[in-house]
Amino acid sequence: MTSPVWHPFTQHGLGEPIPKIATASGAVLTTVDGREVIDAISSWWVTTHGHNHPRISAAIAAQAGKLDQIIFAGWTHEPAEAVAAELVRITPPELTRVFFSDSGSTAVEVALKMALGYWLHRGEPRHRILVLEHSYHGDTIGAMSVGARGVYNQAYAPLLFDVGTIPFPSDMQATLDALEAECRAGAAAFIVEPLVLGAGGMLLYAPETLAAMRDICAQYGVLFIADEIMTGWGRTGTLFACDQAGVVPDILCLSKGLTGGAVPLAVTLATDPIFQAHWSQTDRSKQFFHSSSYTANPIACAAAAANLAIWRDEPVQDRIDTLAQRQAAHLAGIAHEGAVHSPRQLGTIAAFELGAGQDYLSDLAPRLLAHFRERNLLVRPMGNTVYVMPPYSITPEQLGTVWTGIREAIDRFG
Ligand code: PLP
Image (cartoon, rainbow, N blue to C red; front, top):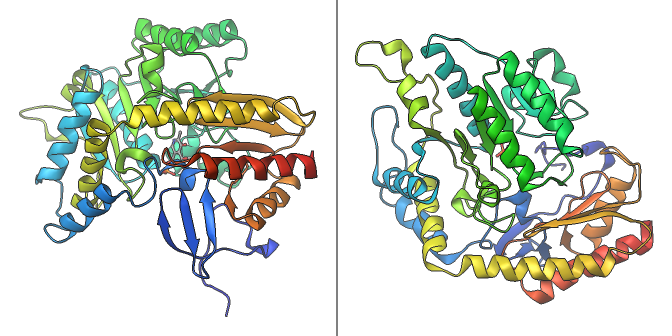
C-alpha cells in the first residue's frame, strides 16, 4: 500500500524511494532495514551536536515526566524562564526580551508583527519591510512575502505583500545606496540573513557589508531584524553570524539549533524599546497579539536548556573550528575541478555549484539526489548547489565518505 504521507518539497510523481529512518546517533541515521546513512545536512540544518545527544535526550525524557504542556498566556514554567535568561545572557545586552514560538517561520512572523506593532504604538505607523534579494525566511505567508519570489512561492503570489528588495551585495556600494534610499523613504524594518543566504543558494557576503547595512538602518531608525535561524548556533564559525560583524540587531530570530535540533522551538528576541512600545498600564490593545497553542512548550524548552548547557560546558567551539578546517581541506580538494563553480565556505558550511546555469528545477537535482541516496548519504542539493553542513560531531571518516560521494558526483555529472 502506498503511504498516505505527503512530504514537503518532494515531487511524489517522480516515484523516488523515500527512505524510512528508525534511529539516529551522532551523524548517522539508520533505516528500518539496517542501512546506515550519513547526515551531511544536519537534517535540514537543525542538528548541531549530533542526533540524540545524551544530555538533550535525557532532558526531554525528564521534562516529559514532569510537565508536558501549559498555556503560556499569563502562565510560565522553569524551563522557559531558564532558556530566556540564558539567551539574554549570551546575546548582546540590548536584546532584553524573549518571545517563544515553534518554528523558524513563526519566529519571522513574530518579528514582522513586533516591528509593525512598534511603529503603530509609537503613533507613527510604518508598514514597509525591506529585504535582501535571494532571501529565504520560511514558508508561511508573511515569511514568504519577505523571501525571494520564485518557484517556491509563485502559486501564492497574490497573497504576498509588497516589500522593498535591496540588491544582493555582489557590489557592496550599490546595495548600501539602495538600502539608504529605501530607509530615507521610511521603512518599518529590514530583515536579513546575516552573512549567508541559505535557501537562496548558500550565498555569502562580507561582515563589513552586514555592519554597514546595520549602520544605515540605525541612522534612519529602521528596525534591523537578523534572521539567524540557519546561521545561528555556530554554523558560520561563531555562535551567531552577527558576532563576526559586531552587529547588534533590534530583533533576532533563532530556531533550528536552539534545541540542538531535537524538537521544534523558536524565539524572537527584541530590544527594550520594542517591548516598551507594547507595554501599557491602561491600554490592553497594545499587548502583543500573537500566540500558538504550544508557545514555549516545556519539553522543547527543556531541550533548549540542555543545548545551552552543552554550549556552556562542552568544547563546542573547538569542534566547530576543527570541522571548519576539515571542510576547507575537502573543498580545496575539489575546487579546481572544471565543473566546480564558486566553491565557498563560511565556518562549518561548504558549498559550490556543480556545472553552470542550472536552477532549482534543473534535471540535475533529482539525479544528484539519487546519486547520494544510492551511497547512503543525506546530501540534498538545492538545484545544482551542492553543500555540506553536517552536525559538529561528524567524524573525519564520515566526513571523508561524504566528500568521496561528492567527488563521484562531480566525475559523473560534471
Ligand atoms: N529563516 C531561515 C534563514 C531559514 O533557513 C529557514 C529554514 O530553513 C526559516 C527561516 C524557516 O524555518 P522553519 O523551516 O523552521 O519554519
